[in-house]
Image 1 (spheres, rainbow, N blue to C red):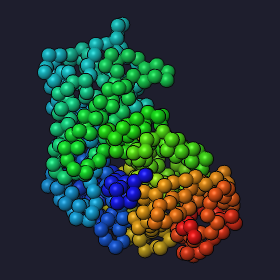
Image 2: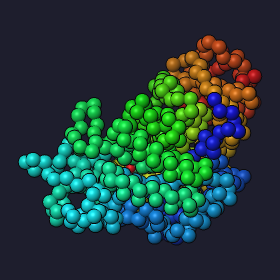
Image 3: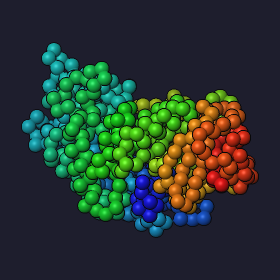
Image 4: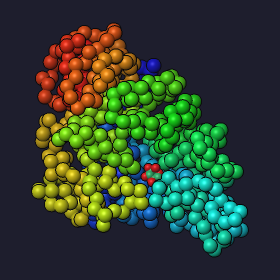
Length: 531
Ligand code: GLC
Ligand code: CA
């Protein structure tokens, strides 16, 4: 186990995901932008009332026709005018660094936009030098797509689009506007490595790699079989490509790589971080997809610990811009349960050994927005979790809720009036204040950062564990049930503790509890300091 001062920056603090379209709009066009992020940096770090995160990961802001809202890139080394300019980006990096905040950008290497000059050339003729930069194939014998691969988006169907001009299909693992780059071609790999260097030279601290498991596919393009995918995670090629990416990033000091390893098998996921020369962190989708169940979560955390090598470090998240928000997904129907569970989820991911990723708005306990059919813009039903952040109460700031002086590009989340940042900052019992205090505690307690983690057997509805180092000893007890439960700890565990934080924020700070007699409220989470 690493001692405190040996931890990397990306292990110590939480990382906050910004979806730039929906974070903050500086010019009133209804769409968030880079200047908007700069305006809000004090909210995140460096000021007294800041949330206190250590880094931001910004979803794509590159020039894009926005068929997939920026995950379809036409120029990897520029900023879309809707988001601002490269100067704005440089300003953002300077201002973030001045606050001790690191900047991670999203790198989208699996596919470009179909309007990218590379693809325009590629599709222009079968003999164009860039033809082989994308994945082109003749129709199957008898016609139709070359194989049975499917787009990740249900609504798209087959992962192949026929291009009449040259009589072949091209591969698109997402929308037809996102043709897959051909990573079998070393020139493609080299060009994408140059993109990394461009942003590294501009001072970024790391990359989130979009659909990283897709960077190696069966070069023979054989059909997927039940239980055997040929369109992703191809062995051992994927790991060679990751090592190539790592080498580029290691030309610079202290930079990090986190991958969207969208695989539902933990054994495969840990292979991306186990060897020390690939990714630093992998987003764990096995965990994201678990039901709201203490035993399931505990088992999954333990699976990870068992599979991971000593040097591998977990990353925990339960929400991003592709999945319904915690408060909507896990609400059990009783009033307030969504928010209570968002609080519990925040306490969970920020106290587990590993790096917490907080998706913008989760610190507010936001639910999804209700998006009427005429306002739907995403092909894959992801608009509700991408609703703009309500910075002020709409009754004070108007319908843009401080996000924009214009008309926001998507409806605001349900409950914006009560859940707005302005409303929560002034309320010591709010979800925002709770998350701030959890992050504060994490920052000041080495045990909650690099400390060891041990399970505590207890009531089945409770996920209970300890975090311990030379500097401190904590017991975290999280009640996943919508009813009060006696902790009922078994085995070797401290007997008395003081309450550091309750997700309810109603227990007296410093209150002493006897663990054997402790009763936890419905959906309550507790961080206790062992005595
Ligand atoms: C990732 C992104 C998602 C995007 C897809 C294609 O899954 O998170 O938003 O649609 O990749 O780039
Ligand atoms: Ca704007």
